[in-house]
Length: 446
Ligand SMILES: NC(=O)C1=CN([C@@H]2O[C@H](COP(=O)(O)OP(=O)(O)OC[C@H]3O[C@@H](n4cnc5c(N)ncnc54)[C@H](OP(=O)(O)O)[C@@H]3O)[C@@H](O)[C@H]2O)C=CC1
Ligand SMILES: O=C(O)CCC(=O)C(=O)O
Image (spheres, rainbow, N blue to C red):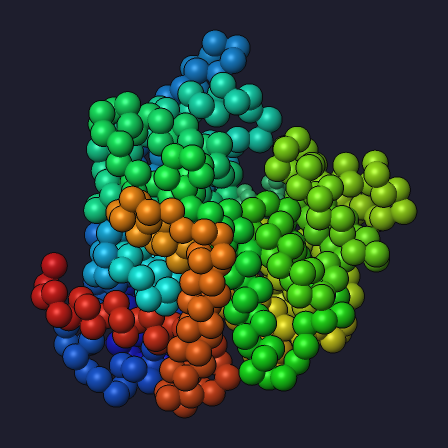
């Protein structure tokens, strides 16, 4: 490993003890930058790595709220404004009990590079809370969101920092957050959040964008490799926003999704998953995936969500959470002759899993590239808000598709240029790093 990278990684672990997901995300990016650092010493001379791994601002705050039983609860809120070299901070909010600094920092760090790949002028950030939305009433969710925004409002703005959804934060939560922001600021600032409702500044196709974008980039890679999607059997983990719309688009293109999951378990339906039923269970009833069997008793349910990767498939689309595919899971996928893995989730493969995937020449698209369609469409939503415009579904979808094609091509050509032909991890990391690092050099020591 390049000395400079080694030095920075050692310091990172010392300065951020225990933040293992953050270490993992940084290590993956820095390791692929070796050819860049060797060919241009200005990044080391200007301490770009030290600066890029240090968030510009970290905000941690108390979120008190009252539950339906009248009890006062306290959660912790986070917003990590990581890098604004390319534009205002941009990235989602995650509400999940596992959220702590290490998770928010890994997500914020990834977001810098993903956002750069979209070609849109957006910096990187992430936020959230250890609040668990599961089992909470609408009133409890509203009170929590209002309390969260009461503090967050002072830190965000349409030209400063623009949050959106992630795990546990969808249209309902963005609505409550937006309502409270407007009330505090007495200002209708549509571009302060993305993922809004269509009648109050949202963009058509934002709901679908991450899942559709994942399939668009996969289709572009398949076109390049002359492989057809038609007839392929697919596993999509998760059954939230990304998973549902990845399933929708890949099914539309002729593939068959045979397994999906939630955090309690997974279902297998050899006839292909009935997506309308999944939408009803997850988007309307906010229920559990095993309810699928009430209508399809011949389908199978297993109560270990991570075992979904033992199902025989051609394509694996992890769309749930970080590190959901470990070495054992990848071995199973390889045994079952998987052709390609594309990451809808952020960092769903462990480093050992990635290594084995690459060693076996499995086609692999890392999350920074593969799931960038969501934030890219958020940037399109910001553009529409700034222009007081409303584009049609087809217009937004067309732009999304083109952005995903561009990302694939940029990652592939950059990989080849730096002697890593076919390695989209290196290609995506290097292409994104060059944009951010060069902007940082232009802007001086800030
Ligand atoms: N929404 C977006 O636009 C984008 C999202 N992403 C990433 O995609 C992934 C999914 O996000 P999204 O679909 O928005 O989130 P949702 O909250 O809509 O759905 C998350 C899904 O993943 C499952 N899940 C969550 N945590 C775990 C866990 N620890 N183990 C197993 N399953 C789990 C959930 O199951 P359950 O219901 O049981 O909790 C649910 O089915 C995340 O990694 C997110 O960061 C990336 C880019 C953009
Ligand atoms: O739409 C956005 O701003 C952020 C989406 C997101 O959180 C992500 O890309 O991981």
